[in-house]
Length: 274
Image (tube, rainbow, N blue to C red; front, side, top):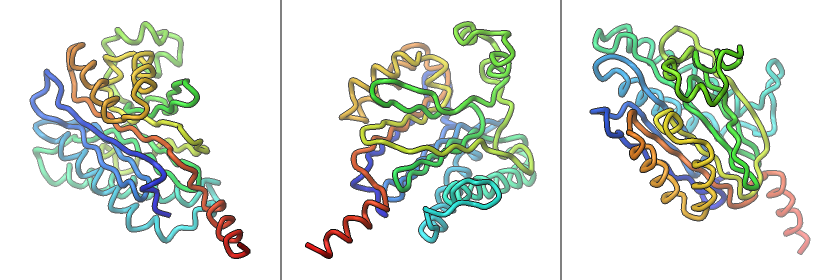
């Protein structure tokens, strides 16, 4: 199914004020209903290399494999949809690509990247992530963070050493505990859930969330729900006004229409009898 007229996607990335180069990469395919965001890390320009290799590889793999997949089928072992398995396979291939590139080029040694992949299908999403880049969902005016950071700070919060408010001022903010491309094998967290009309999803790097509170993010998306580009620009501007300490990437997706394949089939049956 072509989702071009069913969802609206907008993505912006900004170097910020302090950094000299942008190690974030974003990419999307509106027709396929796919969004990908990566925040690279590594010496020299390794972060840029890792994030771009990752985003390009994931989009390419999913573009090749997804059209042949039955979106109603599930994997008998994991219980996930075959769409989620496709996303996981794409991440595995990207991890292999980045890991090997880091081994063969000294200037890229130790490079890696966070990753968030959001794939829509049949009124559902498959979400996979590694690291501390995030995905949020705005539904009925309420903003919910639906990824959980793979970071030292999140582990300290989970163990009760910090409250979420205290964590905002912690010096351990950017120490990730899981990243793509660092090890030969990496395991993403995968989630599936239904989508509703008017849901808005936000993918972002920590250059936004380290500086901009969730309350401001929520108010901004609500205010500019009909103009996602303005919402993204306002969020990036806010992060830069608060110091712009890191690269800032914002991707927004609004669900405009139902895209259930079951309903499409139902409509076809009705049309036959009209």
